[in-house]
Structure formats: C-alpha cells, structure tokens
Image 1 (cartoon, rainbow, N blue to C red):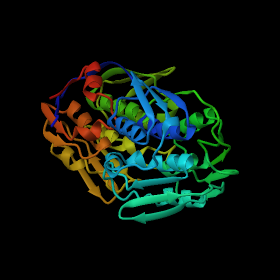
Image 2 (tube, helix red, strand yellow):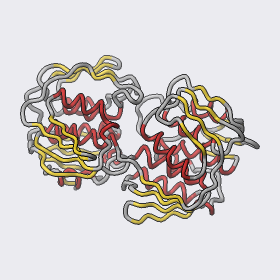
Image 3 (cartoon, rainbow, N blue to C red):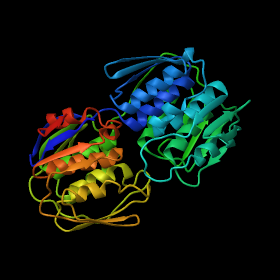
Image 4 (spheres, rainbow, N blue to C red):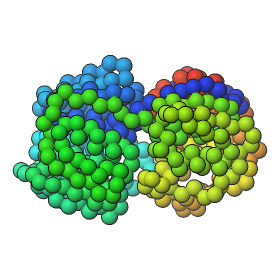
Length: 416
C-alpha cells in the first residue's frame, strides 16, 4: 500500500504545467472507435483512468501505443463490442464507451460502471438518449445489452444537463441517419473538446458550450491528430493548494476562462491571481478570509469537483464559509478525515459550514474518492507536522504523479 507523506507548513514556490484534462481525454479515446482509423491524441496525462481506457480499447481489438504524452490509436482492427465487468468496475467514465461501440458496431454489451462512490449516479439519461435514437436496450444480471439495426436522428431532451449522457448521445449520433438535436445539453469545456475532435473526423457537430447541440453526418476522415485541453480541475486544485499553504507559484498551460468561478472565490479568499496569456501567477502572503456561500452547479457554475479542494483551503480562513453541494449528495465524504486534522466543519444534508481555525495538525488520513483525496493533500500542505495519506488509487485517477508535481512547487511530499 502506497502512502503520500507530507511535511506541512512550507510555503509553495515554483512553476508547474497543467496536464491534459481527464474528463476530456476519456470520451475522446472512446470516440476514436467511431473514427474507425488512426488517431493521435496529444497531451494525454499519465492517469490510471487513461490506462484503463487503453485496456478497454485493446480488449475491443484496437491497436494502441503510448509515446510520452501522446497516445496512438488504430480502431480499424476493432473486432469486439463488449467490455468485461472487471474493466467497467475500474472506471466510472467507462460508460461513455457505450455510445461509441454502438455507433461503430450496432450493438454493445457492458455492465454497470464503477468509480468514486459519491451517491446515486444512475445512467438512465444515457439509456434514454440511446433509446431515443432507436436502440433496443435490455438490462439483465447487471449487464446492459444494446442493439440497433439502424440508428435514426431525433430530438433528445434531457431533463437536467448530464456530461456523460451528452457525450454518449453525441457519439451514438455519429452513426445516425439524419439530424440529432441534443437539448439541455451539458456545457462543460470537455464537451467542446469532444466536438472539436469529432468535427475532425468529418462529422458535422455544432453548439457545444450551449444548451443545444446539433449532430449530422458520419465520420469519413482518417489520420486525425488532436490535443487535449488542460485540466481545469487540476488547475483549480493547485490554486487551492497555494491558498492553503501560502507562497507564490506559476501555473502554465491554463485556460483561465474555464476556471473563472474558482479564481473569483480564491481571490475573494485573499489570493492574488494574475493572468499572463496561458499562465497564472498565484500568490498568498497574508491570512485567508471566509467568502460568501459557494454553491456548486453545472458549468458555468462553480464545479462540484473543485469544491473539496477549495473547502480545504478555507479551513484556515478567518470567519465562516458555507458550501452548498447541488450535484453529488455524498461529496462530503472527506470531511471526517479533515476533522482528524483539526478542522471545524459541520454538515447538514447538502450544506457544509466551515469555521476557520488557527492551525491544522498532521494526521494519518485516508482518501475515499478522487477530489476528496485532493482536499486531504491540500490540508496536509497547510498543517503543522506530518500527514500520511492513504487511498492514493483514487488520487491517481485524476492527478498525474502528484508527489512530483508538489515537489516542483517546493512541498515536502514523498510517496512511500
């Protein structure tokens, strides 16, 4: 079992380039199936979820090769349409392969996906979207069996915006006759990145970033190259880390417009954040102050994935900060571990009230989910003494070599 040992109380100082977005690379790797040819995807982070996607592609019969931060995929050799239960359980985002396999093969067999236990995340919207396009779906013994003799374009009207369901709808629509309209679509930057990739294949897609996406046409281009956008949640996490620990850092390769809401909160908390092109200069010398209530919501609202890291930064802020979680009901699973470090956090349903304390102390804590693990690491950076953090398999799903990145920023962090 790996442990991340952090000696806290050191101000950060250094520069870091933000790696590619986990939530962008995974659906685009699935989309390589739809392309039915060679794709080269650049800026692919070294994450465990990416490795699971590579395993899935290879199981399906695709040829895959990684060279540095680039992944080469040849999906023309695909000869299967199923994903075994073991691989599905390793990654929540594996469900996005459903729409891609269906578009390519006309059938797909999967089981229910795994991932972080953040409360009910049913895939009913995914299934609704595929059924609307003409897919026959049976659920039996934990298996999802999809078949479509002919996919037909249609209007898909989501009752709430869902990132994964929007992605599955976009992928399946690539094989449809006629036009597909996705109404009340998710608007996240990762949806825009998927649209950009699919347009390179020859599919005609527009509207990503708005509430209505239109999909028409089929893939026809081969030899596609695409660069993944930077990970906005990773950028937000390191801004929060600087806020907690103090000091001055430079974050390079950032898309500032993707993290406006986080930047505004951290500025209000007391950080200085200056933009120079694609580089953010983040500094904090004085004490942090509590901020107005932070309410999560679908993009462009405050991202739920950034809530735990920003909460960790607020633990030492003077005053009281209120967090309202509107996406995942179990998003506060990291709070009991923060209490072991001396935090003062009280939870009532979807509301967390953080009363700033004068100091945190190191402790042995366990990560139970990806972003909660990031919160524990950020709190450990600000704490006095040594913290041992376990459950790193969750953190490795979304943060590339986090101990190396923290060391570049002057932290005393070692994986043992």
